[in-house]
Length: 133
Image (cartoon, rainbow, N blue to C red; front, side, top):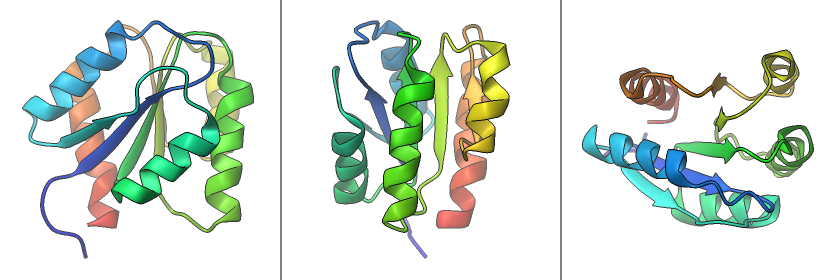
């Protein structure tokens, strides 16, 4: 069982450069007592998974505004599953409501859209990290 702060990796993948939202989320998670590792812009799925493993995180949060969520997130899920890495994924950004069931089917724990209360995201991060701690 892990002890200490909940560790969350936040990532922006592909050509998505809209990073204001992920920075607000990072700050909210830090203010809630979590440790946040932000990978920065233009990451690949391979780089995100490698960073998550190296940093021994409890949660991976993917911020997507480019519309590439059904291309990039499945690659992350595949890398995690193929390597038997059990880090839960949450996603956020401008994701179509109609795409959320598909993301959840592939294993994304939750999807948070624009306007989600920061406290809701922090509470959910605590909830899903409990099984890893």
